[in-house]
Amino acid sequence: MAESKTKVTLVGTVLAKQGNEFVYEGEVADCEACKVKKACNNLQKGRRYRIVTVRTTHHDCEVHLNGATAVEVTEAPITALINAEMAIVNSKIRLESSCNRADCRSYPLCRPDGIVEGEKYVVSEVLGNASDICDKGRALKLVEIRPA
Image (cartoon, rainbow, N blue to C red; front, side, top):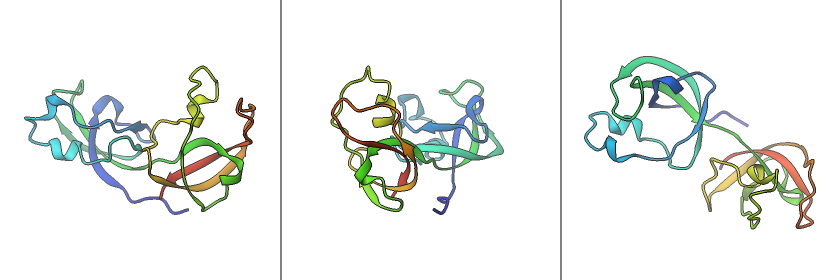
């Protein structure tokens, strides 16, 4: 599957390292008076991003220790557990987990960070079978997904 296009944004200088991933959580109140807030807050809230290039542009920032640095990001793939019958490469799916067992060791894969509720995703790769058995009796597969 083709890599998504890059987008230039600003992140905390301490976090600005190629390969780092983050989930954009949205604008904070301290950003209101900032002259470059549009450059920082140009991503989709709740989505996971990967830094692909760190630029030399640096700005003072009230939110981030040591200021903010310009970076190029792409939407990062997400590893998730899904029902086995949905694990077909290039198929579009919606992640809808009815499981609320936060104590399960597979929970972070059934409800991974970076998923926007109600949006469609494309299965880009099937990584294998789940190592754990779901308490609900479902057959699960480990997959890599991207926003559709």
